[in-house]
Image (tube, rainbow, N blue to C red; front, side):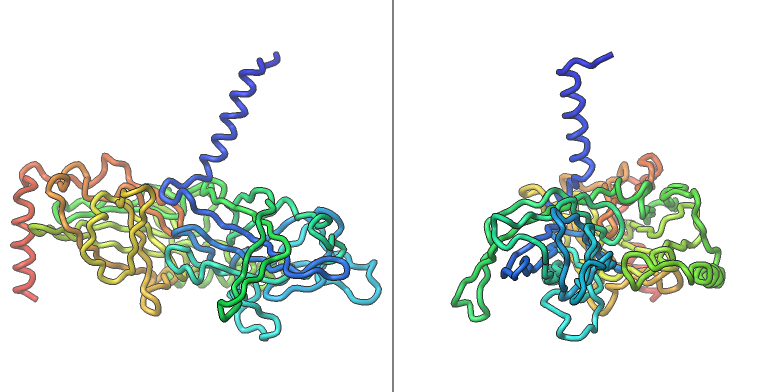
Length: 447
């Protein structure tokens, strides 16, 4: 049975809307990664271009082992040479008799060089192992660049064909890239800011992230507790999925499993990066009921007359991964009135006009910006002091707990709302403040 044209059009429109919605982040509506190609000069059989990867995502970075950018050449182009990056495969260059190209693959995959390479292989913003910071955390580190010399290509704006089918791993799946679009040429300022030059040709590729494409399950979960209730609300059971996951019951057990894994993959082909075997980088989790790599615990700690305090603890349950340059995003109506954050750095995330209910937290450089692997040092914590708004503040119905939590850009699994610690009926909200002050005073006396 054939569908009417109107019904078919409706289905196609709905599918298109859904695909866009999947990659849409309401807390970072304009976040994306833009890959920009600037043709700087023509060569006898092609061009030299600088490729710049700009991360415009507020709180999602690219961790080690870093980015991998791929594309399909429009014709029979080859890569003669690269500076600041390398293609992972040379491909079949047998038709070249003298100078061999760097890569003859029609679908090259390119990765960043590692730190410490010789200076003649570097350009600005290269050679960090593909690690790119989140723009909201470190704008200067949210960019990566390399230079590529392309042969068997066009030598004018009219004869150059832009590559197609761009892909981005950051470092895993989740990114979808649109087609390359020719845009007005980039204008550059010389070092003394007295002269402008411009690219001969420029095209952009925009890539957006979808957590649903990246993973079937969340990668983090949230637990709650409070001073006014003895209940500790744990992460939901199997919050991050329990199927086909190997876990270690102790640190000693984890070392045994990692050793066995290393031996079994010793002869495996190292994938994509050329330096990091992605099989050996698969998570090895501590055995828990939630089976998440990361847990975020929010504890409502103290209540004062005009202020209240929450303690946030991030714990790593992955024995194979430490999170360098981690980010944590929390959404709560009282985050618009933060008085002090004690051992994290903090920036407000203003997504819509004057609505300021979201905060970006990240570690202080050289102090706690690295969340170590699972074990005794695998956690970071801070306390947040907030000023009350008398018209909205309450401890009832779980108001003091965040609405959403993101870790490294991925939304965490929250506990069911009916499990939140409740305010005992015998302790009205107006009395809790006085009681907490008395308790705090007694603690000070005993200290």
